Length: 393
Length: 172
Image (cartoon, rainbow over all chains, first blue to last red; front, side):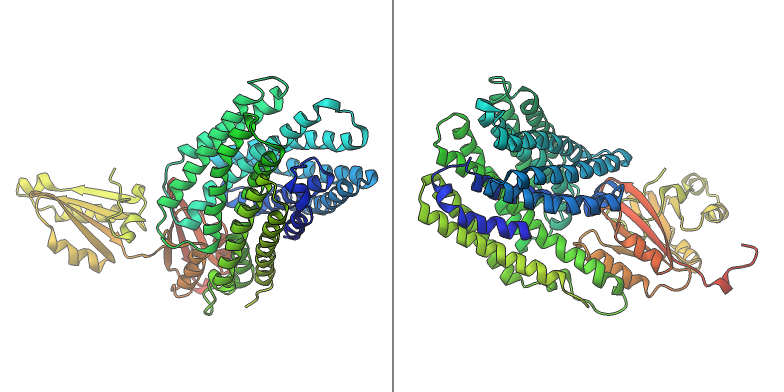
């Protein structure tokens, strides 16, 4: 949550840079990584440790390695982001080395866990694919980081940047989202027994697109348009699967977390036509920046939405669960204020919408306003999460 | 083999394992005018603990209900045709269906329900997945459990409260 708060405040700070579409600005790169490496990747790592035993019946291979992973990842990301923003080579390279070590440990731990798992369902394939693409993302990201000091990539830097970004989002983040939501959405929406075929298509298409992009990114058509088509089709399949879960739900009323998740999925749907404009080269630097921002923040909100479901559950399970059956206990929904959560959700959605539109249109004051609204939503949700974490019987 | 996993059946019948069901089709005996009671009782003796007996008859075998009730069996009757009746006799076991509950409600309700189980008593939780967070808590509280995955979206967790040590025969 600290990374999310820092990222949201960073958006306010880099508002003018966002408005001119200077996506290669070190400050903007730093803020972007607060969301991707800091918020999304740290959340995914933590969530998988809790989620794998439930989804695959296989606990994480080593808890000790998991702790070491976090001990390396969190300072690594912090050093890396500060190094990028300040142009400090020692911090940058130290950060890269630390976070890459942490993520390699994470991947090793995850790899052993996945290998031991007996259930090879769609979630297993999604997370396995995501692990591979996290590795590819790391290699490309480390090369881009080193390039900041050496310039060895020369004229292929934009290509490397675009490839890094899309493999990170489609291959790592979206694949995990597909795999995890395949189990969590039916659980929280009470929509069991639905068809899984859309999720299978989503995993196959996102994986194929990211794989083509990884290997063939230097070639026209098969390294650009075809992977883009696969990834877009994968996103459509994921959205159709999510729609199936929402439509089949047995509980009509949506709580704040599920409402925010639906809004985030809606943002992904909006990103598809924008991606087509960007791919066709019809957009300005501002539109390109708005597109990337929309996808990153849609994923960020999808994860933030699940915090409203997962954090109260884990706190309840740890502190209240042992007392279940012995005395009356609060429900999970009683651990936080629903109206405040609804307010946070509204701020987050309005903030992202304002940001994306104003960045695309290049209106600097509106970018700041959008950033402030978004940050207010993030701070509100974070305050609720910290309050939930302190709840005791 | 007959399958009790039909949503319209009583839950306590649905949770009976298909492999523990003994069938007694006495339609031919009845059509031939022979008394089938002895054969039904012989089939009843073959029913393993936790199992069920299925009787097929050409009319509703109402007199059996009281006989089987005395042995702890509930019944569920189906008229498949005018001269074809199927009656399920199944054990009276506590069942908690948590499929319509959002986590952690299944855990809370199950832990509350097992508190009232008598020594040696059984509760069957009907879930859509293996309740990974519940299982260690059952062990902590001295309950044993058996997980039966009956379909991709359905799991039966059979939870038993252990008998006190003094109640367990030395020969066991």
